[in-house]
Length: 202
Image 1 (cartoon, rainbow, N blue to C red):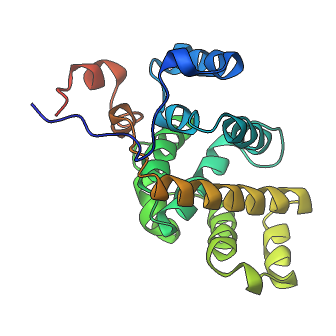
Image 2: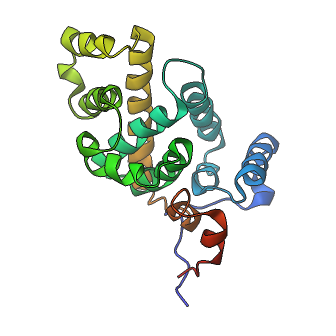
């Protein structure tokens, strides 16, 4: 039997140590997902930062706007791959597969979004996100014009940049603390739930 690997190089608080508001958030996520994503458990080490992190996360990822939930996840996956963040590629790749109902799309976007089975509009969006991730100092009017030609508003462009920047922080902290993805994420959106439940874990 494989030895359980730690989910963080920093201490992970026990449930009895969670502040009430953080406990409520974690239990809500557990009820909805059926498990607790490790990001909630590891960030509970710093309660004030937990609150700030998820407040900004929700403001970016749950809002209404010109980007679909799937497109927001595409941005996370594409840019997290550039930042070599295992946790975010695996976890948000799972969410992307579910939102898009496409079992191949997360792997494609993570490796090379230009070859992925997505629309030209989405490829332009990810071209911009990748530029913000790697070369934000070179962003200019031409980048805005290209996105406008694909139907993005200036507020949508802000969202693309903000999601990229926020997850740049997330990627770096996940890498520093060696945040481990939950095993559950790997099969989510790839196979029917019943088949995933019957698959032995290593």
